[in-house]
Length: 404
Ligand SMILES: *Cc1c(COP(=O)(O)O)cnc(C)c1O
Image 1 (spheres, helix red, strand yellow):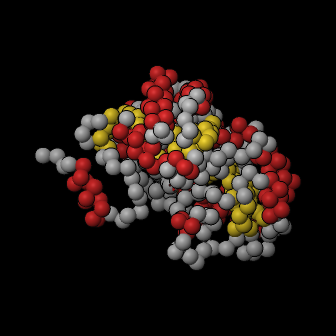
Image 2 (tube, rainbow, N blue to C red):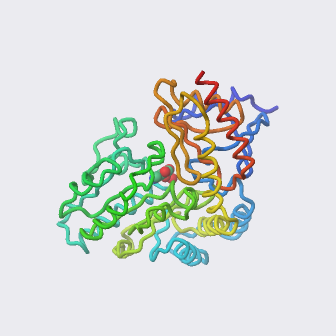
Image 3 (cartoon, rainbow, N blue to C red):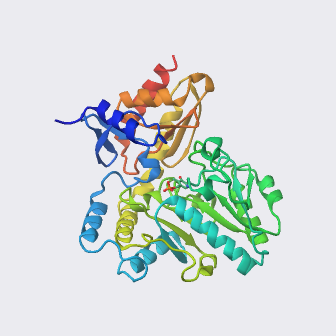
């Protein structure tokens, strides 16, 4: 006899730390863009696990790579070499135009690793006095949940109660070039920023912002670190979102879709000497670069390209956005997005995005509210046009009905 949804929820509530407030849907199976709950209701996934499942749920080729590798060799630690790591390096470097790669696991670990490397680069290469390195970050940033990272978050929920925090970070408003320029001093080693702020509600900076930032970073010898953990690997219709800005970061962070949702795999990609400052023993991870992770990531990158998912994200994203813009609703303040990274921001009077997400769930769509008034829409990149139409019908219903 299977458990009822209420029983799952009760057990989670009793035993689990309450650090999430999920929609009450108990998922048991996924395929492509679709998810099924324990009562066999089907949902279109409009979150894609925060863009970790860009390739669609349980992609058969990634699954096969994972099972094949898992039955051969999973983990050796980096104390020894394995026969997958070199291929992973070659393939991700070729795809992203990078020269050095540091494999890690979670996204937050990639961010932490970049911070460590860039500080050391600051002391050894740029000549910043010991322990004086400064990193500029943006307000409303989201780079993960570790101690180092929440210390420079501007979200009170993310940081309150967790101090004391590490020094060495300066916060400037996102998208404000003048503020960035003013924050620079001789100890500035890096600017860490998301190309599009996802968690903040899919915020896109003004045109030309990143071009000017790139130029100033070059002029002042500042490492531009783009956190593409959410925007990268096809989500915005390009392999990396930096392409929209026609710039190249010095350090790029990827994670999430790097495994297609099978396994935590992240990486620091660098095209300067930044990663070159790390010597044996100075940084590491038991699981980073393990053969299972490498095999999964190789397959995840391969299907993104081979199956045209990046182009599809561009095409279906534009179509989806146009459809959302055509919905006539008093509740909608703005529709934003790039590729299949979309958001509908509601007027504050609409009563919050959460209840719209509940209503969407009842019509077979799983989407996630962010920052009270924004519905984020990010389906797997394998979505087809008729499926976008199916989704639009439901968004139209919910946005016009719930607003009336
Ligand atoms: C999700 C995310 C992270 C953190 O990744 P985890 O795997 O959850 O540690 C960092 N930066 C951005 C932009 C993200 O979206």
